[in-house]
Amino acid sequence: MIELIVLLVILVMVLWVVGIYNRLITLRNRIDNAWSQIDVQLKRRFDLIPNLVETVKGYAKHEKTVLTDITKYRGMLMQGAPEERASANNLLTQALGKLFAVAENYPQLRANENFLKLQDELAGTENKISYVRTAYNDTVLEYSNAIQMFPGSLVAGIFGFKQKAYLETPGQERENVKVKFE
Image (cartoon, rainbow, N blue to C red):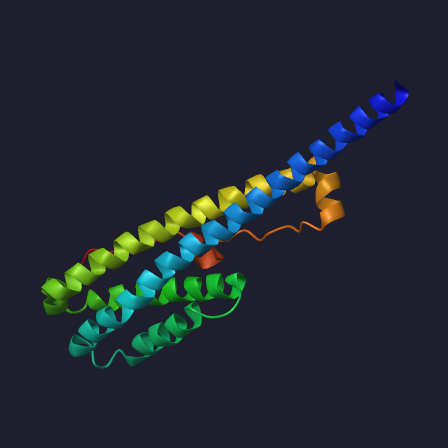
């Protein structure tokens, strides 16, 4: 009888560890999936940018540095670890902001139907990137809670589950945007 009770306790403990382990695997896979969703939107953005740059080039031939920066950051966006790509994404976002500021100086460009369409598509993509970044960070939060809180921390420690990094917004992107009407 005692052997049966010990066996039952061991079985319950094994099932408990398996349940926690499977939950941690699920959460880790959700983080990978969330990063893949970000990757899809970054690829869409990557594909839109050359068209936008070429449209602007026709109007703003002397704005070479902005266009060069965009091309450089676009190249960095699709290579490296997620943290490096997130950094390149932040740099690209800043450069695109400068591009749209340059476009403000060219009324003919702002009225160009192709430019407006590309600008709208890029704005939609930026919104999607923002949404999937939020989903990624929410998943990282849930995973972090699971590996740091008892009893998950025991299982996470035994099986080597490590903390994942949040996607953060750099300081200059947190500042208020100054809008001037002239």
